[in-house]
Length: 508
View (cartoon, rainbow, N blue to C red):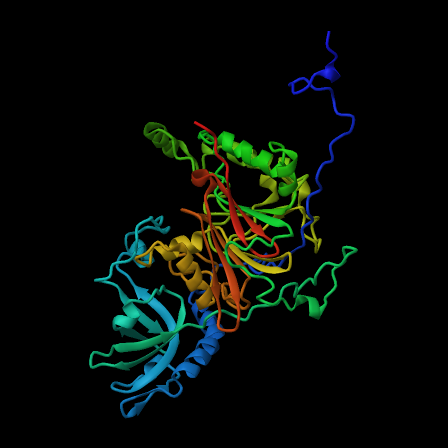
């Protein structure tokens, strides 16, 4: 008989004498900014047009500064370009430039006035079709004085949507239209230094502000693809989990994603890498839209419901699955949860956090009411802004890009994200075609500070690149794909802002 300890290269092995060391997860330096939190006593009786006036007031000085530097000494023929204060001050035949708000007059765009004329007391649901029709669309520039139509190859070839602030140089023709020669955007906002708000962490874990340490040079933190000087932690971003009460086709992938983040399905070497993930951000659409009711059953429910609500049509399983997913993760990793278009939150921008009552198990990890410190589970707004590992981060659940995609004859999501950064507005089409709260005193969608990282969830496919600004700004753009279709999760290095993808796949 052979003793067990004498068996070599066999599946039979005696138990280890020592317990294997469990890797310790990297800590997360996290400070949410609550930029898009609405007041508790919010009202909806005020006019929505005030948002455009607030936006123009905040961005007009910036775009005029860019335009003055570019066109201040412009002379075409015998005439020098001059600045006019208002749209109605444009005179026929004079070379001038003016700043204002773009309005796209598009026949295919939803029109609330038509809904009211047809006795529809609620707005019709928006469709996925494009509003873009080049032969019928008209581009206008407006301010508080009036509106003028913009024409010319320069303006028709530019990527523009309703709500962005621009300056245009041109000459008014006999038809009262401004023939555009050139146009300018506000461009990227001033970018804060790393650790500007919280200060870099010291050896003992405290956070102290050291100006010599936070002046990060661009050559020291290179954000180009392929740079592998990573020594710090990572941020995981996933979107479109779409927990469903009926569709179980990718339930196995969701379980594998959970085990991957927990490090349970990997070897010790891989577990050490997973321990570098300091935070998980879930960027919208955690709940799926289940529309699989039979037509006859649907008709019966519509007939029998009272006061517009039928409790029997509510399916609690998706939110219970999400709650279970979070409660499994939260003991080991902090989670930031953004709502999306399909999630149980308000539909208008900015979406407020998912209520803790929806998450009976995971809510134990949220912050204590009244506490200034975020909880292990941070129920965030959409859009969302925070300082993570010293970097200024801006993220959305994807509705702003999805709505902008209907205005342009392109599907370049990174190009749309770059345009928003250069317009300094994270939701330019709100409130025209993207439902939004009617702000009266401030316009939070204006980017007063340029982020270091800008991500958008629930996109058709993954994409990423770095854009540069005139004052040395550098922004990492990330289009995060829906996990329900791509089975992908995005990892961002917290030192270099490099990006990598991890695909959760099951052999078929």
